[in-house]
Image (tube, each protein chain N blue to C red):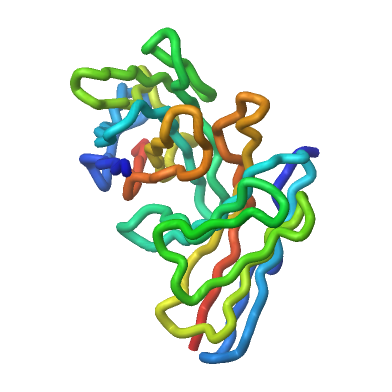
Amino acid sequence: AQSVTQLDSQVPVFEEAPVELRCNYSSSVSVYLFWYVQYPNQGLQLLLKYLSGSTLVKGINGFEAEFNKSQTSFHLRKPSVHISDTAEYFCAVSPRGSARQLTFGSGTQLTVLP
Amino acid sequence: EAQVTQNPRYLITVTGKKLTVTCSQNMNHEYMSWYRQDPGLGLRQIYYSMNVEVTDKGDVPEGYKVSRKEKRNFPLILESPSPNQTSLYFCASSNPGQGDYGYTFGSGTRLTVV
């Protein structure tokens, strides 16, 4: 079984400032890692994913995340945020080689202030 | 356009009245899954299906049924809805056989049981 902890439920940040959304996971097996974004009144959209290879993963809208196996973390970063980045962000994990069960964290609400 | 379509988007019903939320995907994906989203809890898996006629329970299956008679459709059935099933529901699909471990989500169904 696996679990995901998103350490911050709310992150306010000013426009054009950098942001980091933190995600830690726990699993007894190797995992795949994902970040999803949910804009108001919409479904979830895949932002980026780590399956294997380089631990620095680049996604859409200028976001990137780094897989750190020793710290079991997968933090999401953006060097300069825009108002349009205001949304809820979810970290998720699944067992390596399986899409059977995708386990989500409780989410982080990113609010970008003008 | 590749997508997962859920219907209805909004539904208000009374306790005990059977209902079905439909889900259809046009990507020929093998895996389909249902999640419910509740504030502070993130998304929790209700049921998943690895292929036609193959379904299994997720983390919160009580009070729900599913069926997978065709590859594209994966309806969620609430035989006797109760107020604690008031939630936002998402259907999702993926195709791990093609190396696609990230889920594509529908737009959601907001269910209120009174």
